[in-house]
Image 1: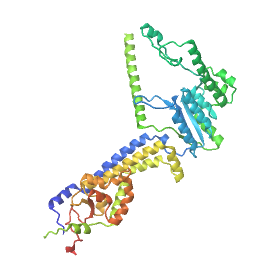
Image 2 (image 1 turned 90 degrees about the horizontal axis):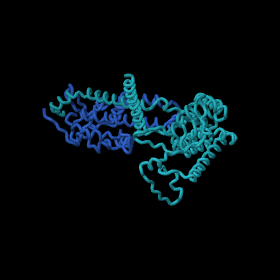
Image 3 (image 1 turned 30 degrees about the vertical axis):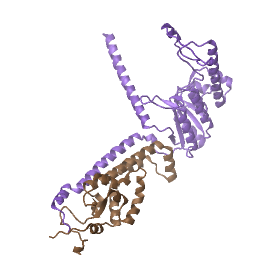
Image 4 (image 1 turned 60 degrees about the horizontal axis):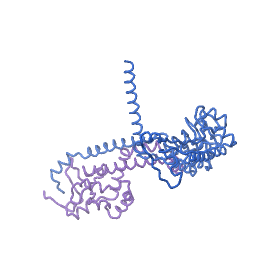
Length: 317
Length: 180
């Protein structure tokens, strides 16, 4: 018989092995529930793994090429790099039969808008644009490349034109006796510098550039919408159109929203539409930036409200 | 009573558990973990992954990479908790639930309860990180061939069969030569 010292037996008895095992299991189970709970909250119902046959690609915010965000800002940017990537991904996916573009954007940079429009035009699968609050300027350029455009009655669309502006400080500098020393090799190298007035010649050059960009924009819309270029030029004063007006002038095909888009695709493709959102994964950094942005905004609103109330109180007194 | 102290060779040979005993102990632990630590993750998977054939599920996973990433991270943490279960139970008690049912015990080469680092090291195959997860495949084969797990070699621990009940009964060991 192996003799085990009594002290060790006592220690083993006191330890109550089953109790320890159960406590460890309980503790770790609680941690597991906690972790899974957090993961379940982060994974929303919309992003559940479902087999979708219609890709929904959001175009939300100002259209730019890159969507890099700083730690303290998450201003909505529709990055053309990301959107084009999602379009290609949807094109490659054999389960996807059509693509819907969920647009809520005031437009943005011309190159980024043109890149998105081109990627949409090159897509072989049926495409539908759904314009929500705003789908103007560059966002409309992208929407015009789709097969079918749907907008709400009061959506803001149109704004076909090109805008460029800058603030020129030369008068202010002169007032404070600040001079601008100019050294250039190439006469128009500093064209558009805020430190001096633009010459008439430079204004003409700049205007020519804008006119050419405008021409490209108008030509693209005319081709995409099968409209006469002269007709589009008449519409392209930079003016915004509500959805109601856009349907009448041919810029939009149908009034409605996402449901109408689903119905359109269901009828066209004879399928039951199962949408799945295609968008770039948000990194932890981007989620944090978004949270900080929201927090900062709400704090500002609260502070503003408080100051407004104090001011009103003073006035009343 | 004359105290018999078996030689290290005898102790090692006589108290070595069989492969079946060890597998049964592991299966008991796996069953318990399935109902406890792993259960919330199973529930989450059921909710988030659609039922269907392999092709359907694969297509879903390929489409929703953000959800898949979140599930992968959750799985990593769950397996980490499983690692902690084995490590903590073996550290505090020298036995997990399955081992206790099968009368197995973990000890170091001197017969003492192993240190926490030893317990962690001998269960590191549950870390879902390369190259540790490879050991999940290697360990059963190594155990079948050498009667000891590779990680037990590395952590200088061993699993022994102990037919003793420290709570009430007088201890016996029927495998010693003097008692045959």
